[in-house]
Image 1: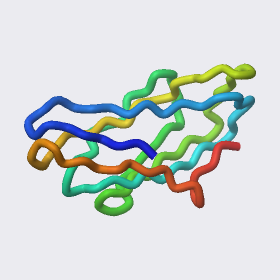
Image 2: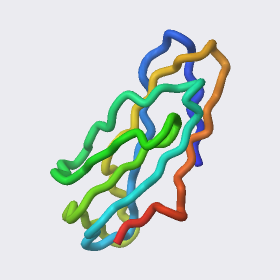
Image 3: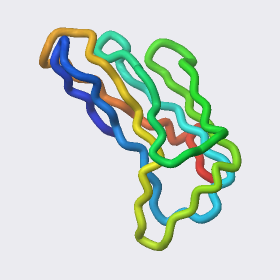
Amino acid sequence: MDTISLEAGGNTNCLTFSVRDFQNISELGIIINYDPYVVEFVDIVQNIPISSLGYYLNAPGQLIITAFNPGVETGLNEELELFYICFDPIMSGGDCSAVTFNVDYGYAL
């Protein structure tokens, strides 16, 4: 879990999504939950081109990210930044939103 803390009227803030010690990832499925009254999802910025990367807002505060056959591979103890999940603040300064990864749905095969 990570936390976003932004100032109202501030700049976009991006969280890094990375993997470590994976070989031949064939599918990726993630649910990201956040407080939609504090931050607003802006975009996903890819660090590595993944042509099949897709995402959609399933409900307010819930982002679903998927990829099929992304062709991503890392070495032992190597961390690879796949993409950045970007948010804008929408509340007054000092408000925070926890950002959680749903492990019941999330997978990397």
